[in-house]
Image (cartoon, rainbow, N blue to C red; front, side):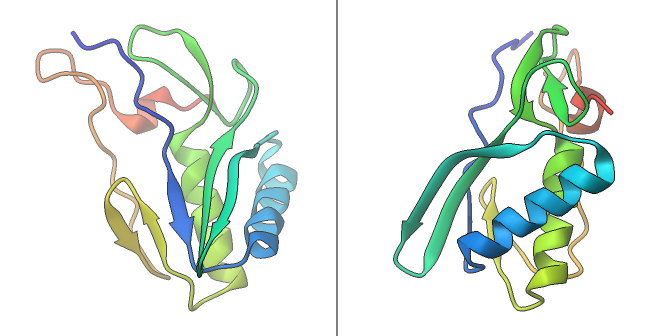
Length: 126
């Protein structure tokens, strides 16, 4: 079984840094999360960012072997992406090699192995 956690989900968007921060703040208030920015970098027209939180609290995630990680969960990423699109309906977000637009459907992915599947949604601490 592959117990290595995925690398940070490097995301980029044409939304502004201020819009991303507002989305994070709104989701934190609504969901009781403590999500913050890890990567925070403007490069040309794209704003690059990653999300983090303290381990073991709502909004964080666990590894396939149950270890608490200081990474934002699948649910937290989805909620923040929804908020970015609510704030800026023309935004484009690139994440995990895919482009997302307003109205996207969040797809659960196996982060475990074929023999021991473990999905993003199962790794979320709600």
